[in-house]
Amino acid sequence: MKKIAVVTTSRAEYGHLICPLRAIRESPQLQLQLIVTGAHLSRRFGYTKDLIEADGFEIDRQIETLVDSDSDVGMAKTIGTMSLGLTDALADLRPDLLLLIADRYEMLAPASVALALRIPIAHIEGGEVSRGAVDDAVRNALTKLSHLHFTTTELARERVISMGEQPWRVIRSGAPSLDNLVGHDFADSKQLARTLGHELPSSPVAVISMHPTTLADNTLEETGALFSALQQFDDLGIIFCFPNADAGSRELAEQASAFCLQRANAHLHTHIPHLDYLSLLKHADLMVGNSSSGIMESASFKLPTVDIGRRQLGRERAENVITCRAETDDIVNGIRKARDEAFRQSIRDVENPYGDGRASERIVQVLTQLPDKQRLLDKVPT
Image (cartoon, rainbow, N blue to C red; front, side, top):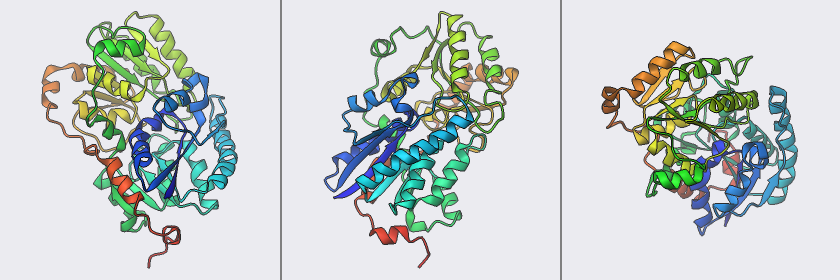
């Protein structure tokens, strides 16, 4: 059996990993080694390690690493502490392959450790572009450190190959987060209310997912315009999702909490389990913010989405996404357009460019047929 180690650091990527994790666990040819670290072990971010276990996964290693200082220094130190902890874990587990996903800064730690330990790396979601965040540089660094690549789109695949990666190593799998939509029974409004702890606000309902802009000196330079715009829509029921563990996240969460205290129809949630989050998108009338979820998952629900500012600049997007500058008037106009019935009708047949819900199947098929370790590690063209 091939031992496949997977590192998850936060809810930001765990929701994308659920289906690949299950597919690996269920394969008779693969052995899953699950390493949980980072924000999963932080009470401030919901201690989501418990949810991983509730999903039925056995955790092989859990490593305390998050330096919760709400600053860029804390982000940098988290990479260092994670590298130390993962060195011992991966040296002990000695997997045949390490599987990583996406572009969170923490992923630089397991990739660097695996490189030193001569453990081949497979990376999901390389070749994409998000120019307004450090994620873009992290994603490209992970691509060059990795030996197999599972991309979400054909354009992303072409970008990875253009970076010098051999074509046989680069497989278009689609986005595994969309696998959750296939055959899934979404929660109805009563079930969702039990999970959230409150009734859904009266329609229209907006899901707000806003994160710090990590390339800016002031990582919250774009949030003021968002809150100013939302103040102009008193009838809008709001579900705020907690920001990622980036520099500025604590202050952003405090701003969101203060906003919600002023409105009976606004609620802030530290963590919403991924399948319930998808159910929320199904019930919502629009989505607002700068999350990759607004780009990758929203199209599957034909959900009007207002994408704000720099964070997702360059990402492929379907016609349901309305791109706005981080300026109050532009966001207000974007929300009005998202609520316009003519626009809503125009996106009823939109197709999601990020896949068909079969990514995990393709990923596991490749993992069960891995070439020998030396061929994976040797990236010199033959």
